[in-house]
Length: 563
Ligand SMILES: Cc1cc2nc3c(=O)[nH]c(=O)nc-3n(C[C@H](O)[C@H](O)[C@H](O)COP(=O)(O)OP(=O)(O)OC[C@H]3O[C@@H](n4cnc5c(N)ncnc54)[C@H](O)[C@@H]3O)c2cc1C
Image (cartoon, helix red, strand yellow):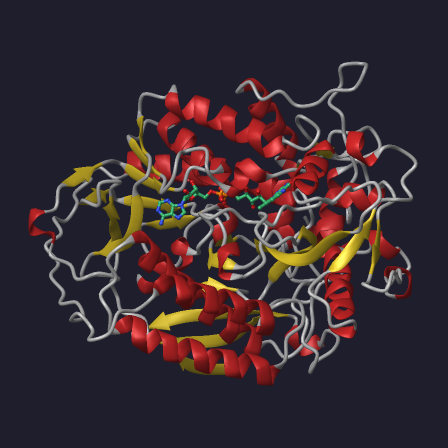
């Protein structure tokens, strides 16, 4: 497969005139303060670099903060690196890179140690050993957690404490990264930002790391916080970076669905404790969809919930906790108090749930040190496609990835800075004209809502070529309007980024004519051998070349024995 598609995206989001914009120089700039960005900043600083750490919200606000279940690492007696590798490759449906998987999984125990030495208080059993739980896809108990389901909070706070205590790191909160600035040779060497007071500022550095997290906000239903608007992928693509496997978007099957309430994730633990899924008529539908019923893989449960909604013409399915052998109010107190506010008693009433966008599996294509295809630009965490997850992410592997590859990327950036004796940087004086004020007022919030609804309908848990082509036409129509209007504030920048990345997801999903992992096409059921390949989008001017890039087919056994 090889084709090109128009992207309709300008090189810069706003008209540029940098003559009076203050420019600050650092050895490295890290955009994003979640697990990936904070870890990378700490390592780069440890190697001697001065680092600017930017975050468009408070340093703590991130997907990392919300992580619940925990982080996977091989620590138990019956467990082994080979078993964790094999589980990850199996869940990734043959598209994960065995070498990357082996690298990341092997570093899991050291990453846990690093967290402990930063003061993270992970849960322990009565003997004082780290408590390990088991999650879907994992053949062994290997998930470390904190505060039962507040692991992200413990990790994010420990990282932020360490960042604040590190002299070489200067943190800038509520600073929105708008665009990467490129030299005429195509090297990235600066980030154009807007401060909380809406003043433009440029952070210059020879090495720039994107750690901006995921894209959940593109979808109407999502577990992700408001910061997850795909800014990193969009700005890197504008700067020429290659993206990979954007069609793989993981959905969580059970998000609380009450109008007006946040789409809180209701974890597998609730189904593991005996919660069952029913449709509006009270029919339990999971046993006929999968032998593991409610504990089937997330993508299977998501599709079954979606199908039951369609079949019964309802806006949700329902989680029933009435058969639990313990008091649901005590076992799930957080869920209990949210539902109580809306008049739902979780011990007796059905809890409305829907699938929601949870994790961006693809992203900026990086090598094992975090280099993107653009000189000077690195990426880590959910914004990147490292090769760990393949076509589906195994639960609790993403925090592991962000911490392990965050450290590797930060260390590589630190070494690169030390090796670069010249440390010369261009002074940016770019000037580009922007669009004129349009004759009509454009309602950005309305556009955001329309895009999110469109993505949920046509690029959700079930997709068809017809639906996706119609969605793409609509997105291109909106893109033309967006190009003609001045983008003057963070909400407009976020919308433009989400629209751009929504198109990348759609183009990649149209290209992959099969169903694999979290990508399910009703018009191409089942995986196809010729699609044992990655989709790659390479920006070229205002177009994107879409290619399928084949990988060597290797059995799990040979992949493990050769690594
Ligand atoms: C509800 C929930 C539960 C989860 N549970 C788990 C779990 O149990 N185990 C697990 O392994 N994974 C879990 N995940 C996934 C995991 O939390 C994320 O994949 C991971 O934390 C991503 O880390 P990150 O550093 O890449 O990005 P994030 O933690 O999302 O950080 C992104 C950072 O980028 C900044 N940023 C973004 N755009 C800009 C911009 N334009 N300018 C400046 N700054 C910007 C943000 O402000 C933020 O600081 C969960 C996710 C969610 C949403």
